[in-house]
Length: 205
Image (cartoon, rainbow, N blue to C red; front, side, top):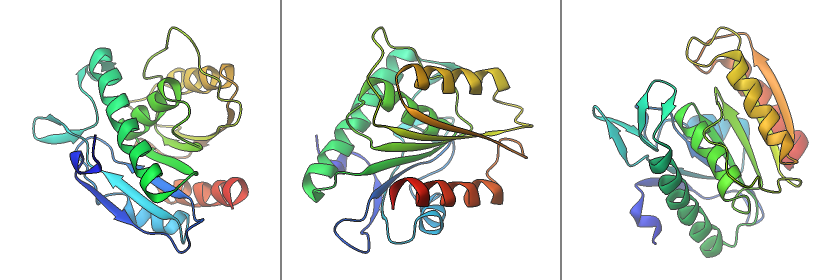
């Protein structure tokens, strides 16, 4: 599989040793949406931003859903492995060992799925407004993986319990999880940016 199978943006980092942020947009977004955010939260990092291949009424997504909050799990599994293959090839071609997913909504959910199904692909993840995408038959070993989850206190789409369930699932896998409740809804706000910048500086500098 080739990287060209995904429409994507790639911005090289300041140095060869700079980590790469894998930017994963939400429903209706595209490969350009999170690039400015990535540049602000981790200056000098490489940025890899693919566009989701699924179209929902003309809006790009990374995997299909049956209804709001109800995922097509078979498609999710297929798309997760497809995206992980893309990232693994990028990592090999660019000799990158530290790839950190930064996903919003639909993008956060497929990033969480990557942690659960392809645990060796990512070094860490920032998950905005995420929920449990699926529960694998065998839980992966995520003891070296650091995860930051930002949930909106007034999010009309993600129930607080759904956000907590994701934290608990990843912790059961051994991940080092930091969960922060943001004083907002489903959309990203300034608090998300500042909290993410601080967490990345503490964990990946």
